[in-house]
Image (cartoon, rainbow, N blue to C red; front, top):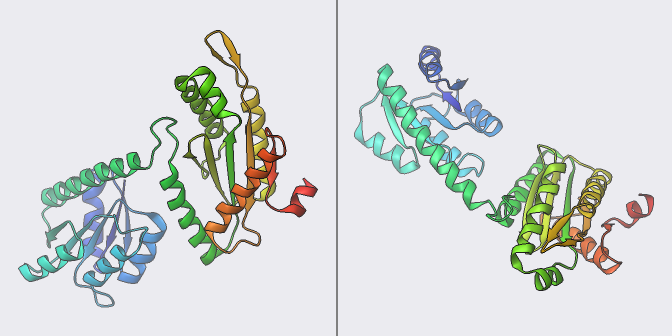
Length: 299
């Protein structure tokens, strides 16, 4: 787990690093508020130790900025201060800090308070993760996809780059449920989910979008790469052999692929991929359709 120390005193930084190394923690340091904010956005720390009295930007202001950003608002903050002013402590806690440690800090107290904060953060992360996991397929759920899509879109607006969204739908799923029953349908959905996950890169996010529909978000990928991914999944799903009540169940899926060319919002990207998926279903299923006509003709 990563701990970010924001303190303009190099001696305090060095002492905190030595003490936290004994806890097996990775520590990173910043000597000013602005530098700490930039580093926090980059490394996504699990905990911030924040000096209250800094000349360029106070700890209060840094804490307020951390809590105002989506990427860092859930990171616990422990204030480091040489003051024992109860008013400052109340103000810091009201801003969202979880604890205070008074300088010069006691080694055992600092390590104990850090352990407590990280335990709470770990439990919080587990709750968030379970709220974003589809219990049947163990893929991410629709909420997780929409949140990640918003993050990736914000990244694109700021830094540029590429983004592909692949939508997939199991063909004739209702017929399968009606013929073989819902347990068979659940088994099929899990098999499709495993296929999608097995073809993903580490940076991709595969999600169950709803019912028998899935979505895969692929940062820094081209439409051609998205189409290649979809084709590998399509072939693998077609080869999936499920036997239900002694009968072999043939499985196929259709795919829609869209990239951000000509797209002005994340909602438009979702709509483009969904329309491409609809076209794949309309044109006969068990195939891939691309949202960009020119690219579709080339591939």
